[in-house]
Length: 220
Image (cartoon, rainbow, N blue to C red):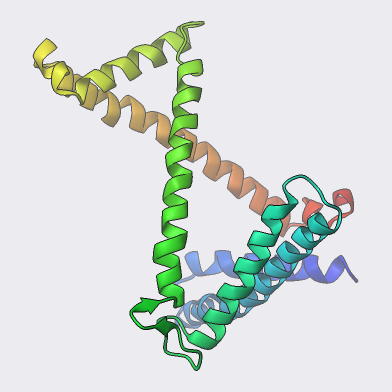
């Protein structure tokens, strides 16, 4: 029963997600709206609780075993507890029972998000840009025909978007734009088509019960 019921539910809800795109019946569409707007929100709330519980369990185990960088786990847990208390009792914008302002200083959830979360995310992506530049430097080497084409295209596009490119040739910016709009878009569409077909195949395998690795136990 531990495998039969989950497989049955996945099959039923998988079919329910496909039917509304095929049958434009008001009853079918209304059922789909109910499932998407009500049932999925309830399931997402339970999934959020399970996810947060799993996150805390992993970091508590990391602290208990004194694994590498276990001190950062304390930062996560303390930040999680403080933010949860402020969010639950202080409200989103300081409208709860817990005061979230001290004079002109505010620490409600929105303030924490815009003044802590957003700057941290910006810092992470700024660091990621340097890693991408380093990876591009290693990748842009003319070791094969494909790598040579990639290097030449990148060089032309970079020159085309700079004022120097227009001084070299008035046709260079338009050629760089053509590379971005035609070969680049064609490649992106090919990749997206492959991803879509792969996702469709995986979804069908899960709905039909062929792929069972999500149940645990090696997918047997």
